[in-house]
Image (cartoon, each protein chain N blue to C red):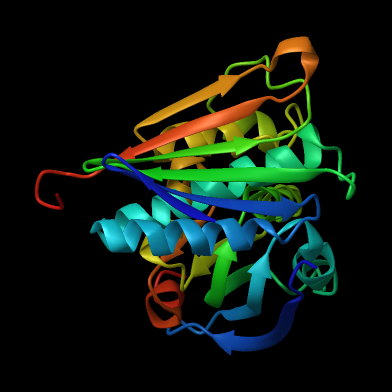
Amino acid sequence: MQTDTKSKIDQQTSPSGKPVSVIRFEGDISSASKDAVIGSYHSLPKETAKIVALDFTKVEYINSSGIALVIQLLMEASNAGQKVLAFGLSAHFNKVFTMVGITKYAGLFPDQASALATV
Amino acid sequence: MTTTAARTTTVEVRLPSRLGFEKVAMSTAASVAKLMGFREERIEDLKTAIAEACINAIEHGNRLNEKLSVGVVLSAGSDQLEIKVMDDGKGMKNAPTKPDIDRKMHGEEDPRGMGMFLIQALVDEAEWVVGTNGKGSYVRLVIRLDKEEA
């Protein structure tokens, strides 16, 4: 009964010319989102995807199990030496991500332009 | 079911013990809170808190047994909304702890297990009550109207 999470990946270039792999999520992020979150991340080539951005613009609901998947992604990215940015979270989920400490390992930005401007 | 007694209005919802149905409690609580005049920001806090309480009840209390249901009772008073989320489990004995992101990132702590912390952080009161005879436990949440809202 949990809503499926859709995800797609595209490549962007930051204003400074660096390639950024963007994973765009749509739907809910919950315990049922492992394929969308971790599976999508695993499909990125670690050798070239040095900067990963997570787009939450079309996500309305994230629960603690979904946040745990994001933390798992951050953990793997940290081990692989990748930088992770997140953007498009609602004000509420920005607060929740900050409360659980995610900001220590991923920058949170209001939109793609402001996220890409930092790399 | 809706009943009104004195100055408290009560709304009750029964959910199957299936993940995803916490959203029914979220939308019901949001509707009640909106009628009471809560600000949008507080309603978002409430939605996350009640979702986490229901997920705990479904997963840990009723252990995903669909023969059991989760009861949600919303009692709207003049200046606060009280929510009880009830299940057939033995209750939460451990107090909520603040997640340690560094330990989680280093694999020393389960990435999950943030629900109780979020509940406590997002509402004005949170109390985990262990049922008698090891059954009928509930979590009681209270969210109060600010003076500007009331």
